Image 1 (spheres, rainbow, N blue to C red):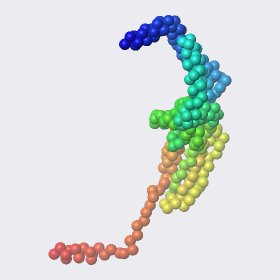
Image 2 (image 1 turned 90 degrees about the vertical axis):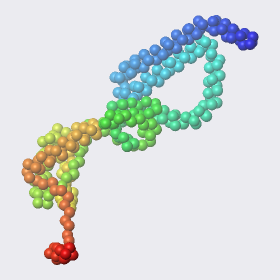
Image 3 (image 1 turned 90 degrees about the horizontal axis):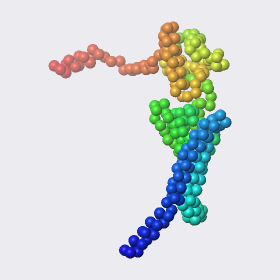
Image 4 (image 1 turned 135 degrees about the vertical axis):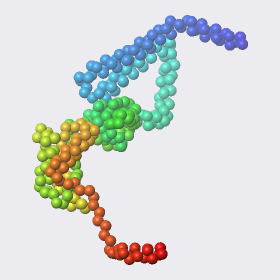
Length: 292
């Protein structure tokens, strides 16, 4: 018991002796923390004009912020005279780094993939992309995962490695998208009139001359109950939702134009043919006799 008390008194004396150093270390850590946040904000604002990619700006600011905080932490440990311990930890880290690297192989792969994605010119925050079965607006690219917000406001978090290893479609790289509409008209319709009316309807509602494109119209097949056609045109759009709205509007306008000119879009028709003639009178007579 006396040894325990003696040891506690020794620790108390060491603690009281190092109170100034502990206070300085705490102040250094706090300064490093707030300095790292200030550096993060400062770099993000000042790099906005020089680096257009928001993902790259975020990466640079985060790395700079981490470096500032780690530097402050090192100074604090030096003030507390833990520099010898720190050197020992660093030396041991070199030996155990291989083991840790193997254990965190997936995490390190995502981190490296995050750095690569941040510097890609064909992918940036705010783009509308489709990848790995998901489509939405990119809201964050960090060192671990890739975040998109879908049209229904659901947030999808995807590992960076998955994004880098799989193809993705970026709708925001172009300002124009082509829409294809497939439809059919009755066999008795004036096909030349249908083509002219469809093209004029699209032109009136989606000015192709301003875009510098033409409306494309092709009859594709003699269907079971209709002659089918394909109409393609261009719209100003940077995401799939705008494209979907434009296609919906085009279908409505084409249907109105066809109704006005009495052009029928036929329903699927199925003809049933009975090879054996039914003798209704004999059947009724047999039923009557059997009932008696």
